[in-house]
Length: 116
Image (tube, rainbow, N blue to C red; front, top):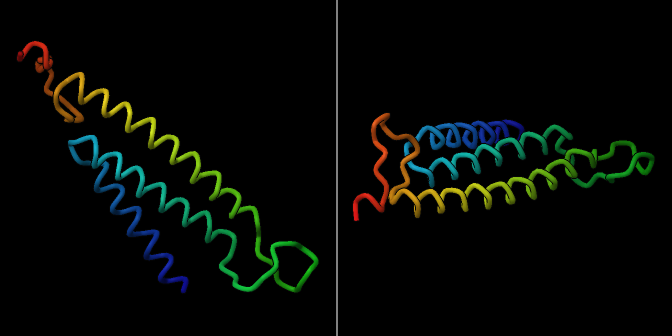
């Protein structure tokens, strides 16, 4: 079980880094999303993978730590909000510039209005 979760974290991280290095905005946003998934799974496994355990101390011999679960829920909400903000910025940049390239050449300052 631990090997499966560790390889899932590695795959999420690898796919996220690969997509962040693309030259278009949408793959970069997807890469940040995959990277946040990897971090969320890592935070979740930091609380020990325990099944059928009570989340309260004192009710059993072994308990499940509720703090990583709360951290992951908070991280999911924050990453969803930040993805929405970055997506709106990318759409605004695409409408303004007429393309969705992440980096431009130093002398390339053409806009959609200049081309029309």
